[in-house]
Image 1: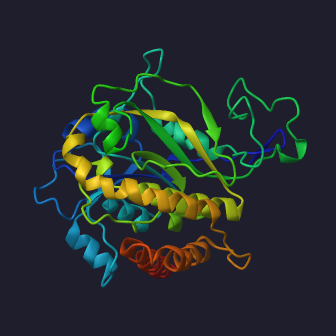
Image 2: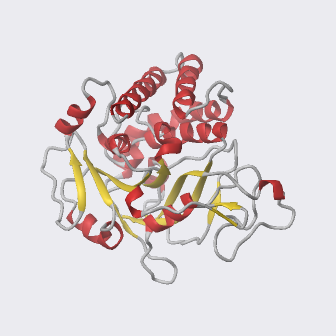
Length: 353
């Protein structure tokens, strides 16, 4: 609906899926901690195909579980790799809801600076329901939040904003650092709760973290994809860059289709697990490759003929293969995986029509 000349939508609970990638078998504490937030929503739990133990999930939730056998049944023959953190993308694929909220299974609800429990889903929904403003920066951050507005000098022609396609939340306690940073600053913890939401400006890249995100599946779903895998990819966030690659693909698509991406609230509380020092050897490959990846996404452009998310991803994949493929085989594999993902997305979509 429109309110005071501004784009705004109302989101119902039955339009939202919570997607959880299960990398640990016992989800009891995770689900119980999230019960006050998750209990009113449908939940899709995707078990990491490499996880051998049976999942432990407490009762009282409306959920579906997808194991490797269910995934194979849905996909048939497909080369898309859903192991590790990439398993959550399968949930994005099979969801029939308009909105997706996804939180890593090592995260718990956070508390704000007043000690109140943070309803991360409600804040993500608020971010997605209100417009984004990527084409001119508002120095009071999100002008659609209560108590804020557009500042003097902000063009009235841009105040309607655009649809927000992606909401990227943050984390308290264990920050989402790379392995080198975490190894050097082993005792550093993020204790700062910043009560702010802002739109990422058009043409600006950011390292999206898949730890705590939400998105409009109808607007940008196919751009959230499992494609960039390191040779020694592990089961800890600092051992992978798949979400960062996916986020930059999504950002290029959003800029091209005039959609918005927000970052800031909501926060989650990240538990501590794993050793950054042990992980350093695995992720060092990804740290180095980012030096090639960032300039590529900063300069890649999509043609005017690309009018759907699927079109955009196909063009980006072609550019990846052409511009980066000669530098490292990981880029060629990523480009091929992007094409496979779009084929799979279209197949699943066609089965529903």
